[in-house]
Image (cartoon, rainbow, N blue to C red; front, side, top):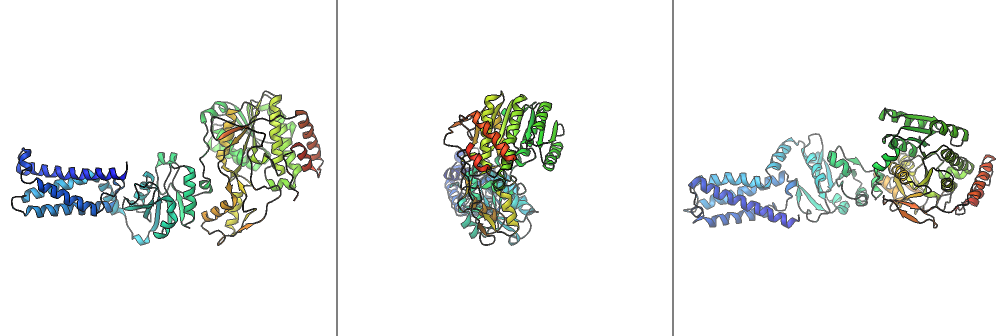
Length: 610
């Protein structure tokens, strides 16, 4: 409903209330039932009172307020308007043969009741109650801007005005609905659009900003967040639309803006029914189950009623942590934690033969790019040899599905880690031809908050006062959250037919320099003023941007539009396994030529000579 229609409806409601009050008071006082008797000789007074009311209400801007957001200011203005109409009526009663004193009193009482009732009787009761609960002087309160003039914003304003405990003074509201700009919500003016936040924050001396737009897209929200961060104000954001529908918007529910809010894309959504169908009542194994991706896999799998969940990890501390967490959260879960190395073929074969897993998620790997550049043999031992041994044990023991956790660094790799993961993809595509197991890989970008990711490094550097180190000003990366990555992996398992490489559409890549600036602002500092951003130069094996697909691979869509399938490539199986055996032998003999040997198997691997 546009503001012109709302204005017309308010005027009609006011005219009806004054007309009804006029006729009812005439009926009560004169006790006549004749319509003509009521209007004869006095109808022009009714028109005059309507004119006075319209003029007074217009001057008081009562037709510009948002009724559902009515506040104490609007109530006071309405009382003033009603008083003006009553004074005019008293003046009219001084004219001979017009109105008696009894009629004027009756009309005044009826008009007050009907006009307030027509406008906002219930908001009047609530807001008067809230007004007398508010204590403290405004200049002692924190000046707050609300971004979002909808239901969530209204709830925040109401709470800030009514709570004894909160020390907030909402001074302005921003909204992109042009029909709302210039109007008032609970006495707080909607002053402009959301991307004008910097100007209005300065104009109104804003100290904190609350973003109350739970239903807008992530791309829109990220732009608002980025603009808000430029103000140096503390920025808070209300819950997502799902949380808002269930719990509403309160000051307590708002959280500080995080890096995830700056990604600018929608969260990956999966079909939980599909996941439940293939995981429920199955024995599921997760290798590397104590790591950042592996542990989140275990959390989500545990929530989908597996027959048994087996965690395999070489690092006992991480394995113990996820074990204790799952025991607390899922006391009925049939959980088994095994300490084992994926490099140990006898241990792997024993585990598979004993526990007969139906589904395997292979997350165990060395993933840190710079560290693998200086230890390429270890990358081959763990990533290539480990994957081969787990994949073979899966095929020999009748595993239904095998899902490899891969990376976009496997595409045209410039580092040994990415090259070894490309070999892993080749292994599972070849294994798919050897065994009845459905082997697939899931390829995605950097994961926010994972072990070794840039986010924890930046946080630590900011805490230490800087500098924040960025290898190149133009370096970009795709990002996703850990739950998103794991949801994709689980969804890929549902789509698996064998041999596919699943690729996520991760939206636009993020410039790492921008990420560093945003993280510094999120921490309350000014980039390159309070905290320096230092360019250190690309590290060995690092490239400016990552690719999701090789030239030879075509893309095919899946029912989840954010997930695509790369076409399986023809691989010379004999050559592949001969070369892998050579890599294995050379790795354990600690060759110094491992990168050259890997390049022979992965021609797209460009060795970094630095």
